Image (cartoon, rainbow, N blue to C red; front, side, top):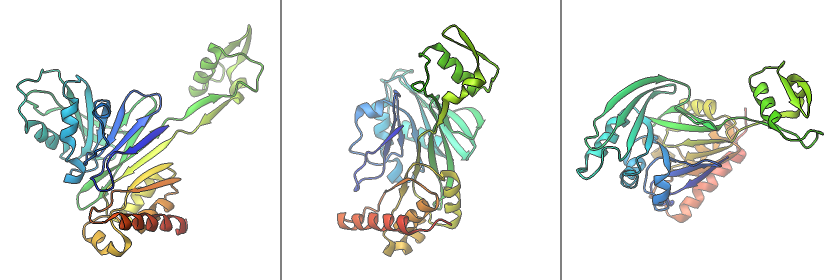
Length: 319
């Protein structure tokens, strides 16, 4: 399961921390101001996912650098075209004469499409940009427990929306059997996952064909999480969102403007409350969360924005 925490206040620029149960690392989506983000949380960040590099989504990357230097970790940064040079510029903006060569390694994955990215490496103290390889893959990040995919949206520039998907788990209902737990459970799961129906499974001195025990197993659907930042509330973007995030359990989505300011939203290629709520319902999202409101709004207006979002979500009909 994913635990998600918005580390920025409603008056700050957006930054979202993602943690996975029984997992050592943190994952960070966007680097706006975030007074709730601790040094320890930053040092445990394994990968940073940047939607785009407008200042309100990238300004706090300096704090990420500040607290990760010296950890000797390999940290991955994903973002749209141009992100590698922008990360390099951030790093080269400081003097590093007292930093050891192995203080940290940044691997930058520059996303050129949903399933293609170029990989660069940056190491102290010169931070030269070394192009490592090109990768074609439906997932931009993979772990043994989950993977991350993306979709490109229009914000007058290209922005990246990310989907975290936990892998399905094979569970066994051992309570409703007379069998005792043992290594056979792992062997049965492996036979099921590999579709080796004839595999011999030995339980308490008796042999069984794997296929005859498959009834004990069930597939548990993995948790899912979406992070959708700045985007125009256009039909083209909404088609992409619906396609990529359909059925996602939890989705954090940009809802920058009140409905009364939708003209500003259209002018600035942002979304507004009602449209964000509407596309979440059309995408059949179980738990949508509006985030990233314009800083021009006071608390009362931000409350109104959320009300407009959830009203649209509840009233939208799924076609």
